[in-house]
Length: 219
Image 1 (tube, rainbow, N blue to C red):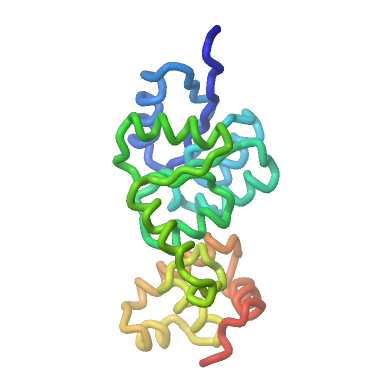
Image 2: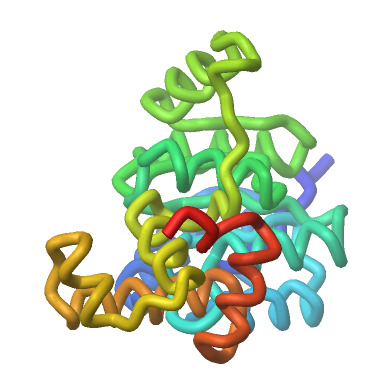
């Protein structure tokens, strides 16, 4: 009896990465790439159109990022699995991906056999993480609850959360740059990333979201 085909959507803004993943999967039995996406919005659309078994999701993409796309896909299509494949292995990103509903988390550079195993695992309903990520997850859940404080907007990095806190307090970019010892351009880049991750269009909307979560009150 033939092995069931696993239908995959690839979401990554780098065509070379998508091409490499497509070639890798097409070299393995029982995989079919049914769609590709260059950003989070496109990933959600492709998932809706093709109803794949799994989406291989990058985290940092233009516009809507992979974490928000994961959240939307898992909310609207809980039967579609999401396996994050990214360069980022920091705690904030790992746990934000888990909270968004990703069932697996691998780092780019994973071996073919590891990607093969991870895709099959998440499609079967299991949770799977690369070796380094798995150790971090286990350590996190081994900590007592008091040591794990919930932070607002877990999809943001610590630095982005600092910037958003100051934005919510009414600070302008120049003042934020001076306080955090950053260049104005770096602050502007952080703010653009914050807008994308929170799916807000402007500073006012970001301030409303931030103040609803208690930011901007200490400055």
